[in-house]
Length: 189
Image (cartoon, rainbow, N blue to C red; front, side, top):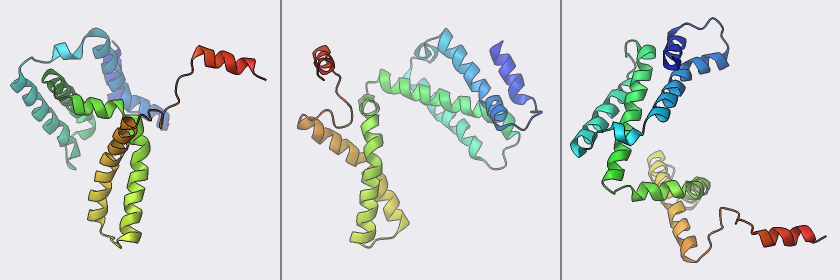
């Protein structure tokens, strides 16, 4: 019932020009589908077991989703949820493919350390940009884009590995306090 109502809500014209209502109308269908799929099934069981079937789903799903980038796509607003769902299914199939074939370790590493990467990538990008502009006098946007992207991805990972190697695990997180530490703090004036 929620999915049907969200589809009607999505397709119906909005009588008010309130941005919050417009956003709610646009994203309600995705919320309803997430509720339905997340509550009723394990997504890994919905996808086929065979590797070639998963690869086909990834390729076809990403192709269908990429059609959303066409400027002259007819009925683009009406088709947008279908294109989005095709992209989501393609990403899910790709994730299942990676997990089932034990090649998900690099992505798992990046996921576990996403906070550190997020915090350091801007500093790495800024360092490369300043070095290129002021140190090497390079102003080419292509060089900045390529080297900045590489630095933003790899410098945080290198820093993370170096800090882990030297045993400094709390550069980006606060260590958990033990009970004795908490009791000792509360007893002191």
